[in-house]
Length: 322
Ligand code: ADP
Ligand code: MG
Image (cartoon, rainbow, N blue to C red; front, top):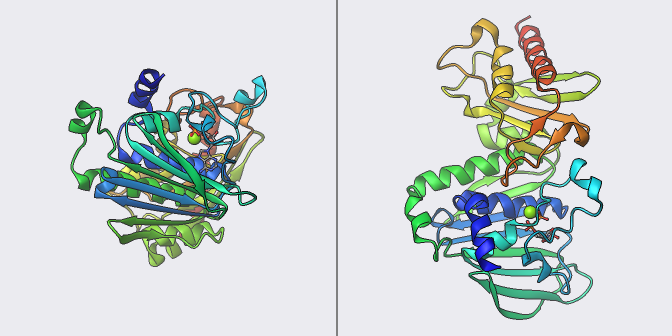
């Protein structure tokens, strides 16, 4: 069992940011409105994620570390109508197989539970306070997979991945208050009041956020909402485009290009837009079960969506210039 978890970990847990991603997704799926992320040495020494979500009842907590034991799918059709961020039931067992993990969780209704897992084996269990929510601490990541550890870049690079990840989460979930601390120092803090422009201000600064213009469009299958920078505020790369589909941050080269195409002739090599694009659609039109990290999503009519995005961006930029 621990071997198959380690094999899965090879795909799910590429670097410290992958751990942070999975833990934050679980917190979001648990309905948290406040998520605190503390990392030490860019997560290589320690990653701690605390949420105020539903928590796990003490009789279910061991199950959470069993492979493919997700609480998020109930019927066979659920895989085609995914509304949660997780659904494969492999993140926790994978992470636990390549680290020392402790979890303290409570539903708030009864005493909580504290569990310590090392290299995938439960090594201690005790009762804990009944404050509703979950704290997961992951220490000594990759301690038992030296080859993976060796592949890890500098702490600076790893921290950049974590911070980029939380920035994008804060855009995808403006009603969640995120707090990111690195070696005790505040990196990001969002209000979580549901205002996307304010979430953008938290990351890119108030004056940039103020100058960004709204985008909005819809057709039968897709609804688009978001913000884009006008051509006078641009960046030198396309990594300032965040695409969110049904609250999931995705990577999609063609849709990023669709955003840029809306800039028309104003698009230049070192002048790329900052954009946050929220796409809402029927989960049936998406296939999220493409890759274990779930960042890649198949969209049933991507061309139609790309065209709608380009149109929406073009209209907003033209309106802003009037
Ligand atoms: P998945 O998210 O795909 O279901 P995971 O391995 O990430 O699988 O988590 C396993 C299970 O543990 C989840 O289905 C959920 O029931 C529970 N869980 C994990 N993290 C949390 C959390 N922060 N709050 C509440 N439940 C959690
Ligand atoms: Mg999960």
